[in-house]
Length: 110
Image 1 (cartoon, rainbow, N blue to C red):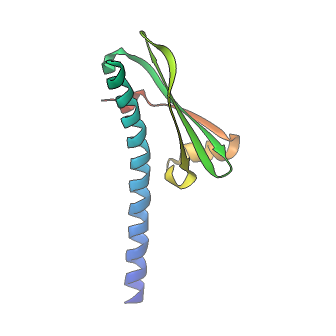
Image 2: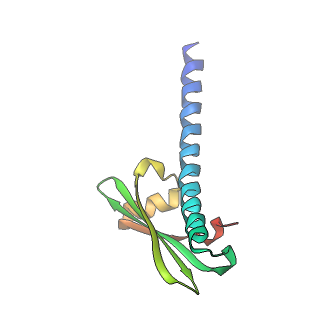
Image 3: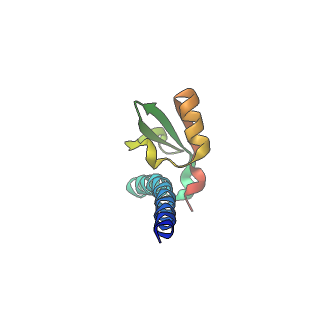
């Protein structure tokens, strides 16, 4: 009985980690889409979009940049996340090794 509860708790924690990762990338996508709407731009106007992550004492500063013909490259958002909210193994490895990471997020916009 105790083993079953233990494994159920582990499964729930694993699901929670997966949901957290989805929430992180969904949050990035929503922030980018919100900026496009605010500027009256369609996704086709977006030439590039990237996220820059910096490890700052166990927290992760996330800066979101977008490039469009009409605006050039602009920083559209800056947010701080707990390192636990980033569940991308490649990003985490790069943050641990270099203290920063950068990823294109253009593919997040449908």
